[in-house]
Length: 410
Image (cartoon, rainbow, N blue to C red; front, side, top):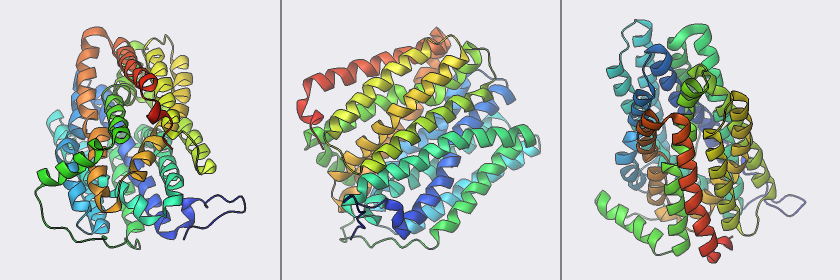
């Protein structure tokens, strides 16, 4: 039973000891996840002196395993020991970062190894991703679900603030080698929080099916619910437009469009994360709110409009201000979308649906990054960012006007 505060609202999800262990592990994991994209991009742009097309390719390979592994991992998460899956994948990711640090230190790093390292690290993260998501509703009661998602979003945004900044600080002091040792250490330390994690047993024992059959059941569940299908559709649009524009192409724009070092992109990422953290705290304190579907869509409309303006910015200061404002809308976008999806998904199917969720949020990011990287090479990074923002705005605005049922979804 959930603890209730004197105001009548459910207590913060961190009052749950088991969720708290998962949260601390997530802080370490998300720090690395956000540092990885930045450090690999920094190494390619400034270390190897390659262009934004190669940067987009490297980020593509980092996220590519998600496109092939998260659906299988989601099926595994509904059948296997989720705690052991997290421990194994996190240790594998730490091993990949250790090997990269050793190669950088020996002066043997090359584009070929960078691509290999991103594939290894991306595979470990992809298998663990739906497991992390499916554990949240398993560790907290339903009335604390949105609080737990908001607190988890704060862990993610803390990593957006601190991951690139800390990696840049360590890298400035100890070189690229130190930046990769920093990531390896965080992953190994994070495993310690998983040893005491007690994960509930699966509610039912399912017959063994192929990943195709498992995926088909999850897709059917999503498509049979019009609102759920629309939530996934808008998430798909964001993953191909806004997310790669601000998480990948922005770094190239800071260097080539604004004449700064690629490492300076750590600051707008940090401000974006701060904005998401602030709005996530608002969601956490509210506990619940009406018309979550409308809040989600308005946040996406605002975020896409800001993305367009980022691409039109003429100074680094403008990018910093817009990144913070974008983060404020991003917190509502992340919390409302994931919360509504999980609230409408039965627990025995949670891993598979979260596999679909991870496929869209992380598996498609590399394709969007590669597409925008190629587009940026042709028309410029700023124009590519603005075009992505305009496309996303057109889709979500049309959906908002035409789907009144989704606006009222709570």
